[in-house]
Length: 409
Length: 191
Image (cartoon, rainbow over all chains, first blue to last red; front, side, top):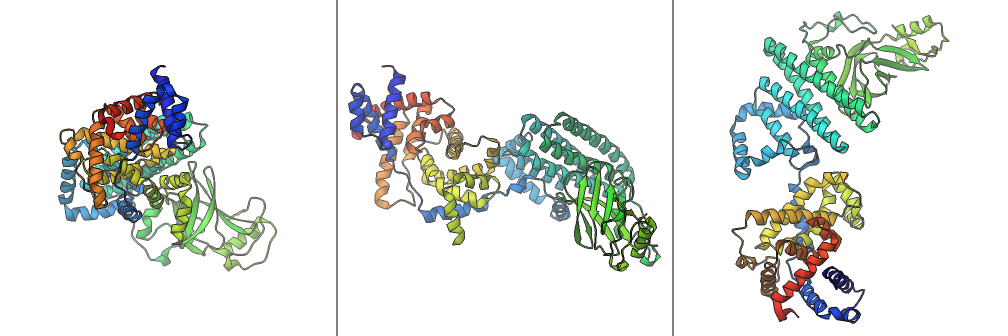
């Protein structure tokens, strides 16, 4: 009998005995030619199985489990901290200076010889060392001045695109989510930093803007290439479009120059239904700047079946949900490609309307409106459609107005 | 109390618990810890010098497992979580033994004492462990791994094959040879 066969029979016997499916005696009777081997193996394996090791009592296990819970990292930590978090760090970094960083860096170097940090460079989302990679990135951002931060963010954005390419090639699409969030956060930071640099050093801002534009356009080309290539994969397409959208928004925003305007008294602002007030309070200037080139035309406002609708046409296709916010109240919007239609029935007569992307809370568009509902009423009459009496001031009047609704402008 | 009862109900549905843990729920991972920590501790204790070291490494194994859990999303659904956990323990052990090769000695293996042991059992355990480990240390490394996985961890051939990256047939032959060799070393005392 060859060794393989012998090993198979003996192991089968061993399993059967340990699982109480057969007795040792049965085995010995069945394979008398293997009696010596069987006895040897049974004897030793029995000793091994009876090996006593310390065991925790249930109470001790629970206690140790509780200790462990404190040591487990939150899964969200693999994503770069939000811009708000980053700003907090920036504020305290001036105060704390380099001390804590030196301590941590020295500690890391001592325990790993720099190996962990180095090895994390090539880590991809979902891998054990990826949190180290993003942590080191955050650390670098925290340490450096704004102009260097922009360069770092350029590099980090490159990393995200490289990671995306690696994950797409490997078919690891589930791991892209954190990467997109990271790309969005870092793009937000990039935009905010450019605003600051623009104010402090306009010449430097011009140079950096050119660099950033080139880089972001390269990224856009890569993303568009993947979108075309993976046309059948809807899930991937959607994610790539989100990244592309972030990329394009960042391009638009870094090219905006701040408009310095003098604040004026609200009474001086002439209410216009669909036109943006010529001058805004200082606090609102930023929002207004962000609108440049984002919406092709000013929004259409119309009544349809008694529902007040606003329609916004963007110059790119939107992905995911969008909502409008007026005076702290959210209103649902429907997205169809680059067209966003919001049901804004019941909004106050005068207010600021802001459109946000639902998942990222990214501001897409914002403008001040001042609805004169009498005007709305007149507009309905002018349309020649059927009329319905109602209270114009309440905004609840529902003049019927033709198939496509009544445009106010 | 109510939560505890609900958790108990879910203990039987390990797949569901693993999914919850993968999605980031620490409490679910805590249930997996409760289920497997003693087994991992036993497995590590067999090769390490002290109970404290085994405890520390057990914790480290579960922290690594927690961090690596998201990667299970991409693996096939019939993945054996227990075998996966033992693989992490196995890798940790190999790394540790490699790093502390010079420091470890057979004498040190017998040093317990465990704070969780009943005193009268301690001596018996020390002797048992010292004798066994001394015999096992005379085997080649792959045989040690097979024996540990099969008889200390209680894994079956398939799981052991998964962890060690070998075929099941190989595992059976290695195990057979290792047990025969151990019998020779331990002699008649274990008959």
